[in-house]
Image 1 (cartoon, rainbow, N blue to C red):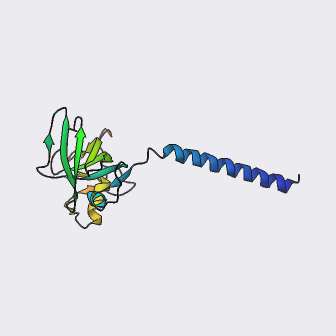
Image 2: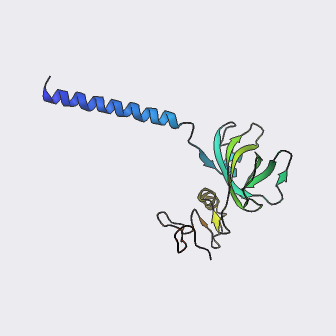
Length: 171
């Protein structure tokens, strides 16, 4: 076998091994990739029942009702559409009506989102980046000092820190 042919075979084998490794990694991750959806996207039937995704928006005023066994029902809205949510468990301390929230779970055939995780905002100016982007895309975002993601609002910039550097600065 000539040197050129040996080199081509080696490159071909390495390429095949890399392709198989990439395929295995993607196959292993298929159950852990979760997409973000807004209530408007869910209302437009963009999500099939039984598919796991994140639903984000604002907790609609007057929609929170508590049932037995730590069951909570509420509605998430992006002001254009609303999706009813059912959650069983303890809610975050900062969860309240009119505030930004991101839930993770599955859409049931009846159109109710069954959440198994609820994430609430962390201060009065925070809005999850996905929720802010969805509201901006619909033209319903009012800046008023709020920024999506972290306080700086720009990729690569860190939120202000306290003198000790351990947490966000307080105002």
